[in-house]
Length: 144
Image (cartoon, rainbow, N blue to C red; front, side):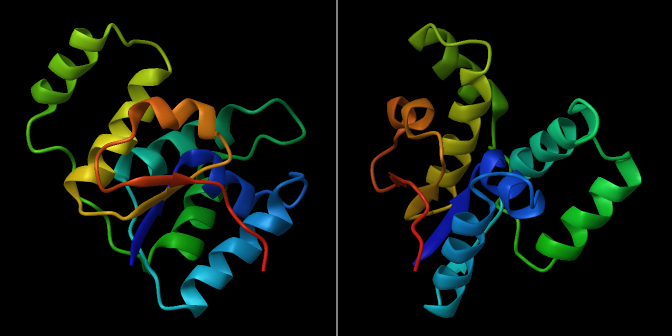
């Protein structure tokens, strides 16, 4: 089974102060121990970098630190390709009347669908469920 995650999942893995840190680590370890294949959406990496470098103090980290954390923890995992035609995604967004933050959620779900992902794991179910594509199940992380 192939899975991907959104930026809040990556951030929870990397931020020990986050209330979801422990359960997210447990979920990731369980999936990998079960042999599930983790693929990253490039946008998820970019959004995680953006969020972690703009958080309010004392949680904000310097860009070089964030890059190091992302590479160290997720650099070995394959990246899904970006949408073949971004205009198709923009057409889809406009047809649905979607904008703002939903642009990013739809983009991640779109890449997951195009990449043959089975599950998209997020703590923000309500953000992603409207963007579910056939064959991609949106789930919350589970503890062991």
